[in-house]
Structure formats: C-alpha cells, structure tokens
Amino acid sequence: MQKEIAMLDVHKIREDFPILKREVNGKPLVYFDNAATSQTPQVVIDTIVEYYSGYNANIHRGVHTLSQEATDAYEIARKKVQQHFNAKHSHEIILTSGTTHSINIVATGFTNLLSKGDEIIVSALEHHSNIVPWQMLCERTGAILRVIPMNEEGELVMNVYDDLLSHKTKLVFVNHISNALGTINPIEEIIEKAHHVGAAVLIDGAQSCPHIKPDVLALDVDFYVVSAHKLCGPTGVGMLYGKEEWLTKLPPYQGGGEMIDQVTFEKTTYAGLPHKFEAGTPNICGGIAFGAALDYMNSIGFDAIAEYENELLNYGTQKLLEIEGLKIYGTSKNKTSVISFNLKNIHPYDIGTIVDKLGIAVRTGHHCAQPIMDFYKIPGTIRASFSFYNTKEEIDALVEAVKKAKIMLS
Ligand SMILES: *Cc1c(COP(=O)(O)O)cnc(C)c1O
Image (tube, rainbow, N blue to C red; front, side, top):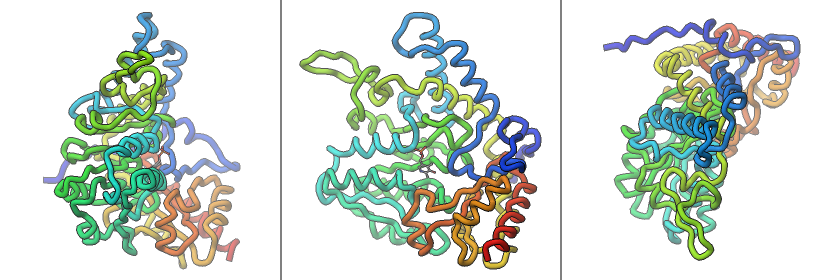
C-alpha cells in the first residue's frame, strides 16, 4: 500500500528562512550549496537568541537557576537527538563539534585496539574527513587501509567489498550518502557483512541526515556520526552515536573538566557516558539549537522532504542534460538531490564565478573528495545540491545561468 505523504508547501516553508529573502549581486539569492551547509530557519535562530538573552550559563556545574535551566535544556536536546536517531540510551549520544570531531574520537580511540596487520576498510566515495583520520590510525598502529572501489555511475563495487572482508578486518567506515555525487550507499548490506567477520562499522551520516531519518537500532550500526549544520542547525555541533559497549571500551579522547569522576595527582577516574567524551565546556547553545533543528525538520516530515527533493532532482537532471556538452557525474538510481556536473573543456571554477554573479550559490572544486575526482580524471565539478526549501524556478535560473556561462566561456 502506498504511504500517504503530506504535501510540502515550499512557499510557506521559504518564509521560515530569513536568508532566502536576500539578494546577491543584485539578484535574488538561489542557494544550491546545501551539501556544504544548510540554511537556518527562524525557530533555530530564535532558540539561539533566547539562550543568550535568557539563560546563558555553564552546565552540570552550578546549583544556581540559570545553570540548571541551561543543563536541563541541553539534556533535553540530547534526548531529542536520541529519539530522532532511535538510539537505545541517551548516554550513547555524545554531543561533539561535528562529524570530523566524532570520527576523530573513534579513530583515536581504536589506537590501542588494533595491531599490526589488522585491516580497515573505507570506500572510494569518502569525504577527506573519513579518510585522513584512518590513515593516521594506520600510521600509529601498522594496520592496513583497504578501499572499496567505485564504478562509473558513482556506486560502490560490492563484490570487491566481499573479497576485502576477512578475519583481519577490524573496522569498516563508509558514508551513508556521498557528498560529492549524492549516491546512497547500501549500508544495511555493508553493516551486516562486516558484522559477519566481527568488524565494527562507522557510518558517516553528515550527508544523509538532511534527507532521511536513520534508525541506528534497526541498522545495528556501531557508530553513526552527523553535523547539525547540514540539517538546519548551527555550525560547531554534531553527534557521535556509539553502542554502549563500544563507548565503554574506547578511552576518552580529551582530558579536562566535565569528563572526570575523581581527580587526584596519583590517579584520575573518568566520568561515565556520555561525559567521558565531553571534556570542557561544550557548545551549549549549539546543542540546544541542534534539538530545535530536529524538531523543525520533523515538523515538516522526512517522507515529505524526500519526495519533494526527489522531484527537484529529477527536474534538475532533465533540465541540465538539455544543455549540450553537459555531463553529470554520479548517475546511480539510488541518489539524493545532488547534481555534480561539468561542461566540456570549461573549468568548473569559471562557471561557478559567472553563476555567482547571477546570484546563484553552487560549489565548485573537489568537494573534499579528491579520490573521486581522480577516478573520473577531472579537477573537480560544479555541484548543485538541493534542499526542501528550493524550487523548480530556482533550477530554471541555474540552467539559464549555465547556458549564459557556456556562451561567454566557449
Ligand atoms: C560535511 C561532511 C563532513 C564533514 O563535516 P564537518 O561538519 O565539516 O565536520 C564529513 N562527511 C561528509 C559526507 C560530509 O558531507
């Protein structure tokens, strides 16, 4: 039976985002750089203003009223994150500064759990923040990095993954959705097969969290990481979800206040979860606003978001392909609303510059995923990434701008 999906009223939604009213270079802003960071709705901005104008205080420390209000709001936000991602316990939710921080906690934590000759598997579709920390871990431990290759469509070659897995595999790290191409990776299969050989799995959800609502319990994933700024929240805050057994096993990442139980000069004992991984004063306001962003996204509904964004993806793909000489990279049937493309012989940067003059924000370059660009033997792409607050009219403006750039540059 087809699920009833509430229609999304994009014009009403756009009213929630004050930035969408501004002009750039005398033209209405068209914001198509959502895969780099999303825009912020008024309710999230209000949450930030209310925190600093109403109850700004340090948490978990004071008995005074403001401190208790801030602590309560912060812990409520943690519960919202827990519920959203369906974690079993709220202490399995570590609030970090974002995806990169979360990955580094895990990569550093595994230093003493790996031996020379152990193997770590990553995918060819990774963001640099999901490559470099593992390379550093390999340097520290003598473990070996293996890579699941990609194909022309921008999909992972899964039979090679089967061959790479063995009793030597200790960890597997894959992003849920590629930020450069939009490919949705088959993470259910990846997790199940990794567990079959006893390996732990970390899924980088930075690019999936704005589009889908992952269920970490159903996925049975060991670690799942996101950044709030990719889903309408502020920068500098994110989540490390880890199964309790793993978080208990990993050592703390940083020492400092908040993460201790008892401190003497002879011996310090660490606080329990989640505080063991939250040394120092956290991004209190950011954490609270992260919760507000999840509330906002859920009030629209992830089914409605996915359906509408898919419509934008299909429309944009069709319209852009009408431009002669335009090639799209990442053509998997399983993808989100990201279109990475190039125009014959024209450098992506030159097109990006002209398009910006017309008020349209796209990303140009390697998108922190140089191995993907090397695979296609290109310096980079132009990437237009659509969000639920974008419109077909904006896509028409992009198509016109690219046509104009083509005439000017050829
Ligand atoms: C944005 C992104 C990251 C990095 O997120 P930060 O917020 O910069 O830490 C990592 N992986 C993917 C897939 C991303 O899209």
